[in-house]
Length: 316
Image (tube, rainbow, N blue to C red):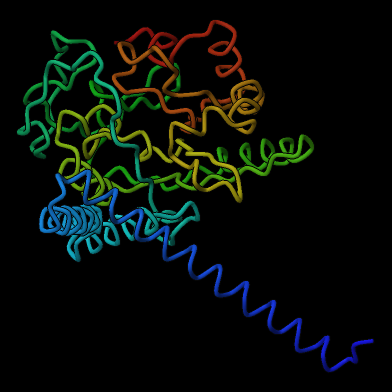
């Protein structure tokens, strides 16, 4: 019988033999592959070496093309910073003033757009324009606001005196508080984020929009100084608390808060001042957040007839 020492020695010899056999097989494969490769290149050793070198260089060139340059990385980083710099949360400036939306679609243009009509001069009686929704060329601000059926009117044909400064209407504020309290029962928390604006403030605001978008575009969503309904103290820009990203934005119209307002505001004396599809009547593009206080009776009539304030007052 063989002892354990002999068995251990035999196992080691067999293991060594397998390694040797494997090495010989691997060497044979390498030699066979080399012969085949050389044969594929016309039995030329130099040609085979050149082919390997060319393929290596091509791979390196491909990797270099795919690798972004430093400038590309910088541009990408800058674009990323620009995209993340905007925030849905409100800024302090937004709480103090209204930033109207940039015009996204081209619609029917207003005809009369004279920069000189922004200038303030001696009051005179207004002249009806050829374009019923455009500013009156050369018009001067009046000494008294226009009142029709007890309603103070401010639009592109009927401006306000420069010194007209009533402040926010107490009656309109009380009506809004009632409206907001009612909305809370439906789970909607409303806030009036912009109400009365002085003539001087409108100068700053309007000029900013003109600088940003140009006068023709700005005139579709922002009133020239003296023509702003906010100067009456009766206009309320309304939004929903904790949803400030929709304030003064077209997106507000799709919210539940906007839908609730459109259906119920008239019960508290407010009308949607610039309805959709009524730019030819009001002179301004649709603003789902801009409401005007006119009193419950008038608001009820305007709502039921689905008309604008201009149509109700019989003016253009």
